[in-house]
Image (cartoon, rainbow, N blue to C red; front, side, top):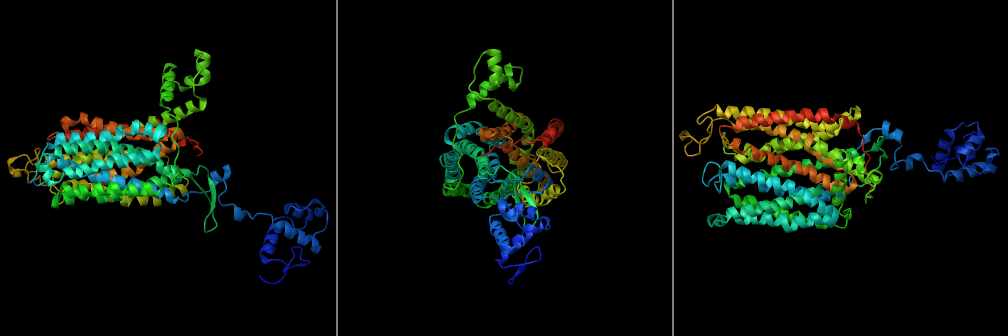
Length: 595
């Protein structure tokens, strides 16, 4: 628009910058054009000008000067904090993710590759003898091998508790990641590789080497993963709902909760990708040797240090606070002696009832109550992990009892990784946005319950498959152990691909349950206890693996079908309890800590 533009009253021409003219027209048309006073007030004109007529050119130019200082709402709307009504009525979306967060994710993904790459061949490495149909090195048999693998898993999930205290009160999360990666886990991966070389196996170094490596891997991995998960979420520091205008002009609200959910879903999806690659290491184990299968994760662990060190100056690093554990323990003691009520540990109650001053505040007790509420939900997860961790040992052995068509039995886990790679984006990009648009509540407790259901169905199916193995020859309920097995080379004649639905159900459980559990532990923990609550979340897996040791007498033929049936019953009961006891928490909104 290059020519003169009519005045809003239709009487004069205003010759001014087109953009300013347009803005003046918009501003005035939003008011009653016949009410000069209202129009002037809207334009924030000086009071002396409000008493005059708008018909003069002078007043028009004053108005134009005034409009220069008026912000266009559409220009400044993006990024402002949303009002309560906007939060309630506008569509919620995922916020923009900072690059530093993806750098932190890369370090965590590489570390998970090391874990999966090291543990994937471990059951065979420990259980089987060299030269058989199924690859092996030490020949320790299934029960002993399963116990060592379980001990490794237990250690990696119990170490996070003391590591969390160190991270929160001494080193900080970043330094804990560095030290656990450099000093411990990388060294453990290197020892595992070195002692799996053929010459090391012949010289008897393999057994002490694998035990030493497992100890170091458990400590390093436990310390690393308990810090990297909250450290990743720390890199997204927006705590408020904010307005955003999309390209189509629709105004929406960015949600921290949806963003954290998205971050962890992408993180676990990427872990499935590297798990898919790591689960291919049994091919190297079968056709080259265990040494090459362990060389790759060894190299990956050292590579994981690159993004950690590179991103140092970009990362948000929260300084460690003073050690709050003594105060937490004292507060818990006073709460227990006060009738299992944490309010009894508040300063006012302690001073009034016991004349005892305490070094904490009411808000500190509220943070403990908030953490305890979160941990109550997590207490059912040991049963979940007890069943989920069957993929690391007994399901590998089950595959060894079946016809594998030349596929390594410990490579069947790859079907779970593939399932996760396919399913996770469908759920994240399809199901969750669909439910959000329809304003259907699908809170964390609901998602975790769905995950429990899928894993229960998976365990039912696994029980049926084990029963079918025992009903199939040539060795029936003694697979690979009868004379017809031709010295452990002929399995029962049932296809290993029947295991695929088991892993598919496990992948669904991971997307709905484990990802949500990680998110729930972070979102619902107070800022001063995020690493600690995350460690307790991980410790549930360690407890679940400890429970697995109680089933050791059943981890041999012909009792495996019975064991799977018992696990199915336990998980089904835990699923019902999770929903009945905690479904109300989906309606409970906990305010995020301001960073």
